[in-house]
Length: 289
Length: 89
Image 1 (cartoon, chains in turn brown, red):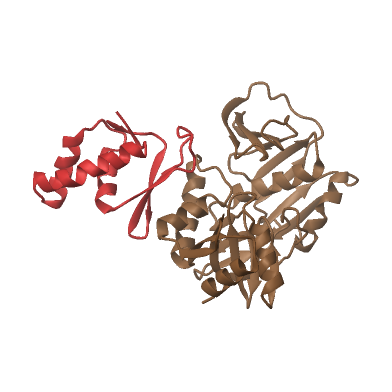
Image 2: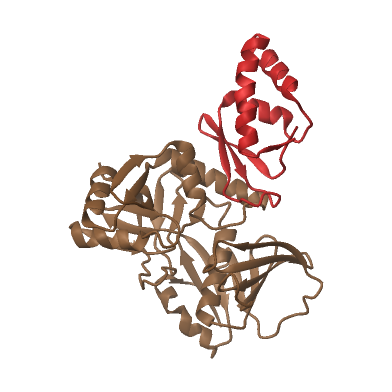
């Protein structure tokens, strides 16, 4: 069975056997189902047998921390091969074989279906949209008066907590996405943020989008303080907050073009904060001006 | 001296930024912002062997300034590049 989804305007298709349990993991994707289309950016197909990959050539191993996934990237028969483990020291739990253009992927799951299906689709989405003014972000997004505010920061900094502080303390706030929203530079130059089927531990899968009001990079501190970031600081903070392989030159060029437009258009702040209501108000009063 | 492989010069409005993008650079989040003359020098010597005099001569020629003035720009710039490890000896 094949199903097509549209996330932030970009379509992709998933192909898996009808009765496969993996379809149970596609519930967060329901709001994004669309008509089958020829213009899908990529197709991801579940494999039940792995080909012989013993002649693979290692390119790089990426891991951002002990409790973060580890991705081993290889070249194999003119394609990319990615072997992925849920943690730095964990064994490989699934494989992706993709063409170099990231338009067609096959994946083989050994471990958790949820982790595998979500990771395959997120990675393929990030790679396939890299040259299309699109970034798969790592952020929590709160909406207030029709504008989206993206809270950025390393894992464990309190992005979700800060969103919750806005929602609890400031009237009229709602959550758009809690972990992986999509950012797009529209044809008219407007920067918009979109909900996605990927929202971390919070079930918030909204097929909705709003213009971006501001970005706020969060850092834990003993007292609350906020300041506007310079262009290079904003650029660097953005680079820490989206997914992709910058050593693939075409991808890096795409990311740079998008990032430059984003940081030149939308204000960017650094909030040093405690997890308290005062932090939410200080941030709100500054960034919604 | 030589510029390190893996760093890509990107323009950012009127500013410039050196971004570690290549597989050769292990600290993938490394960045250094450059002004216009530093970016000019980087482009001129990228991938080539150079020394302090190379940079001084390039600045003198490009901006029509004296050796003394060019030296005052180049000395701190080289220190910044060395500290940021974007060049090797």
